[in-house]
Amino acid sequence: MPDSTAQNAQQSAPPVLGGLIAYLEVDGANKAAKFYERAFGAETAFAIPPDEQGRTMHIHLYVNGSSMMLCDAYPEHGHPHEKAQGYTMQLILGDDIDAWWKRAVDAGCEVVVPLDVMFWGDRWGQLRDPFGVAWAMNAPVKK
Image 1 (cartoon, rainbow, N blue to C red):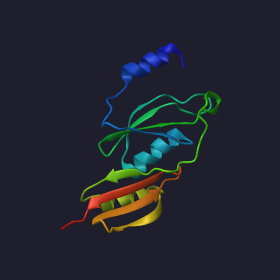
Image 2: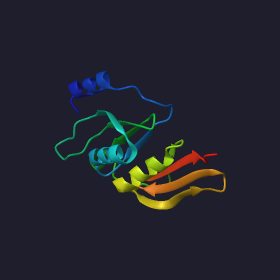
Image 3: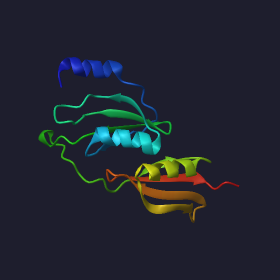
Image 4: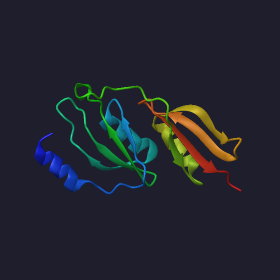
């Protein structure tokens, strides 16, 4: 990346929301960002333009009041694509969990565990997005 692009990225960087940021490497970060807009109401706060191969090294999203970041794999720089596994993106929601769930499923998420009241007393369910990332939604049971 040329120095002027690095300087511009630093000057244009939006504020990070939250104290711990999920930074996902996915196969098709620009497509994933657009999907997350449809499925989870994400807003793109910042994105490095794609390179000549269509890859981007950084996208900053806001999702449910927090920051989330994405990039594509760059195997030539020691960052090959690896299948998403061993983690779940957990959305903590309120009374609108049904709307969030429907939007995600309608956008193309696969239901892994249906949304239901769980043994710990909350409503919870798990989805998988088209990029292989597991997402769960959790909300207190309405009383």
